[in-house]
Image 1 (tube, rainbow, N blue to C red):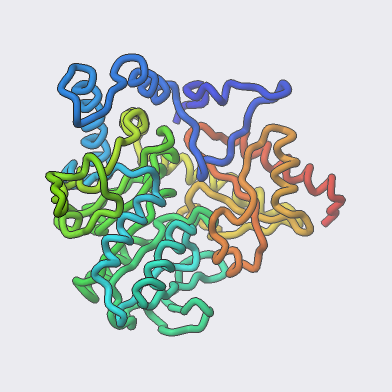
Image 2 (cartoon, rainbow, N blue to C red):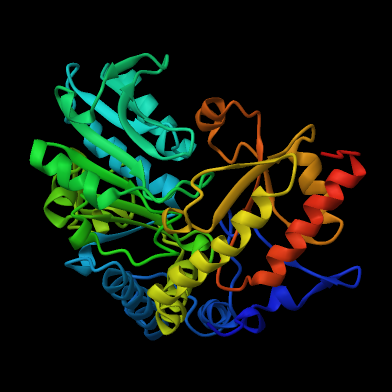
Length: 417
């Protein structure tokens, strides 16, 4: 891996004479010049709506837009480009799936998620469970942040010793990588177990923290649906992706209806157009989708295997150095092979917001709070946590600055452990 920082204009900026140490890529990745140039090209040369105009710049924009769909399909090894639905983000994508699948549920049915889920993969299924009167169950995690087989209810009461025991299980929706713990879940193994159990279980994967960082092959995984966000993988905001098996997408009812997604409309009703247009109501984020296509090109030039191995090495460098600092508690697995590029921690006696504020004095950018995962923090018995997350533009010197920043926090708060 070469030093990619030079490709990212924002990382050339200095604030008060100090460079930016950006360690919040789990929330928002930075953008390379290639992506910025692709977005600027849209505004300068092909700024028109897609799929509607028959004039030149509209047709050019449509061509670039659909080319991005093809790139993303190849990127995750979807069988057809039409299995790629453009959404606003991961949250929007999961809501699309949840609405469609909820129409088939009965009161005896069950939905399974885990204790480590992002709110986007918790709250949406809570609403479905409430509206449809179905059971929402949770896979527990152990003290290292690794999934167990034990299934609990919303009151943490153990219901089953293994998810295979759940009757009428219809939907399983899990994060591939935890945005707090960094845990890489054995999704392929879980899916195989579910398929052996039942052909009626719909499997949804939150890939927001996995697709940008490791090779994702949806045909090999055999998931039914996969959601991820472009802005976490070097792309612009406003462009997310929902992958779904074509035959399943054809059966789902659309979540949002209106313009662009119809075949015909009369006073009596409407007929939806074919997939993928059926799920893409209204004007898309044209520049966002085209920029995401450029981000895929950039990532492919590096190679996903190289990105994953580089981040594994960064985590292997960072974890032991952070965990050995007295008074610092680190959450998640200690094995870098089971750990994505996210490290969450707390300093004894210091709120994570104070940690983040002091680090910001040296332009070290981390996230603080519950990271949209309040049930997980309750499980961890932590009000909040500080989180550092890495990507291709980080290096060991960034980790070193983070460690020095943590020591500075301890000194300011007079923590002499």
